[in-house]
Image (cartoon, rainbow, N blue to C red; front, side, top):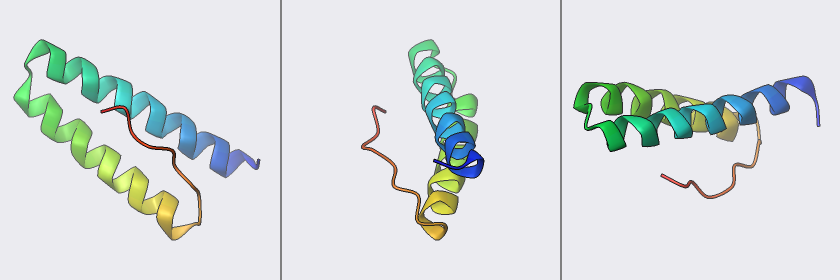
Length: 57
């Protein structure tokens, strides 16, 4: 796995974790921010043929 793919997958995992935490804390604004970031990262992954496993969130 190249550095780009590894970094992208790591960012997706971190963002999923942050999104889950924001939901648990009831922070609606942060949920929207993290969801937008996650959507962008998934789109970037798809554009570069990086396979992302099913989300936990």
